[in-house]
Length: 548
Ligand SMILES: Cc1cc2nc3c(=O)[nH]c(=O)nc-3n(C[C@H](O)[C@H](O)[C@H](O)COP(=O)(O)OP(=O)(O)OC[C@H]3O[C@@H](n4cnc5c(N)ncnc54)[C@H](O)[C@@H]3O)c2cc1C
Image (cartoon, rainbow, N blue to C red; front, side, top):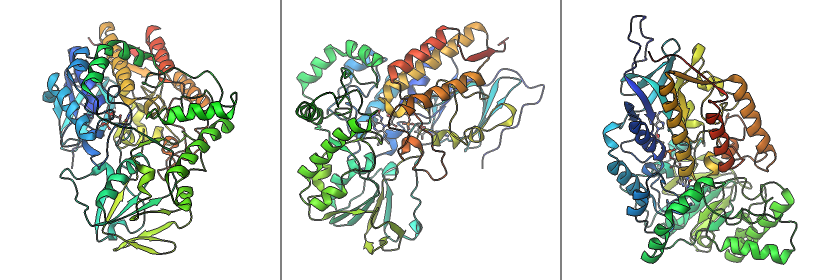
């Protein structure tokens, strides 16, 4: 049990024990620590896990790797780091990305300020002193001026909500909590529940080991081939030579990856031209390969259907059994409105005789039994169940902390009908509490590392500004927050995203409000909006207090 923090007595000193607390030690928390230390702030990072790395510490399932190219899915803040680190594959595996984060932590001497195995459970704002009181699950309490929630957009694991889960007599595994020692599935009958990006990455490798693999699919995905491969020494050298210009272009880009924006509608060109463009996108091995073909893929249903049907035709060409191909073909939602996946042999895996897919729209899961999975028509006996059931994305890790702002309002209460904040950075009534790649920012629609750097740098500049002006508090105004939420909703309403039940809209978590959670205007435009607010004296925010 932790000790709940109590408000300080009136005679308590004004100065907090720390200048900043950062919650989480993934990409975001590590970079935030580095930048705040450069400012000279007394900063501590609390990390719930046994080690640093966040996503890349926990998601150790077979096949786990990034689906943004390694050279782009990495920090840009240090040109020396870019030159010294060597990626071995186009899409790095989880162990390699974790090694990279360890290298970063060592190179910038970050570990000494990270407290591991310590979860922040409560944060209470002292309105008089402009200080947050932080309580951890180890019983520690600290006071700090600033808090940065670097808790991750995909770190609150969604446990399976299927009746009977605890009754299963075999082994249950979750892709986001894969055992560090690995799991030998040789000769085992394995069930996979969930076909999002983790499932799609894991299924081909699980099939290589398992004696039988049964995939329980509620919604099929659109998956594109990764065309992953080792990077040659020549390629790496050539890339490194142009890293500075690539990094500059990345920062100006729409989604943290660099490509030419399309100029035409998919409906403006004839079928032959369209198919050629889609073939090139498919053969690019890039997550955005098809999205980037035409301007209206995510905005117009008819335009979207052209690419959706193209992917279905690819599935039919790979999967030999027509019924299986149809089961794997998405028909109920437009291409790209749920996160597309990048795969290695995903569809081809279903051609293997010991792999089968169960269509849960026809025979839903009724319960987990001691022997396996019971669907409405039969029981599927298995030895191991792999849950690839995803995350309570974007808001889950933040509302899991009991955060009490001005007037005793909790963040959870305030966000009961959906997240509310200004510029995705600060929620009104919760001063000095910044969020990195949280809701209402580009977050999961962008290369996360680029968006993390943008947030961290904005937050660092903001704190530097507060200190230089002697201010001790920054809060979003209610008006600016209202306008921002309306702006984000308006942008989303011009796309096909909001109508689809996905984790982007919170639909995967029972009881979660249905709100489109990300900013769809592009990371470039978003960055410009954040920069403009700062330049104009932190427009939309109120700065107050006096450090003296
Ligand atoms: C399998 C997988 C693959 C992905 N691939 C990509 C990709 O290719 N490209 C991309 O852009 N994004 C990808 N993502 C998204 C990924 O989460 C981000 O790219 C990035 O790693 C986020 O870093 P972060 O530091 O913000 O959060 P995380 O890496 O999630 O780190 C957050 C940390 O905060 C800790 N934490 C949370 N709450 C508390 C608390 N209360 N107290 C203490 N500690 C706490 C967690 O334990 C965790 O270690 C992927 C996600 C997954 C799950």
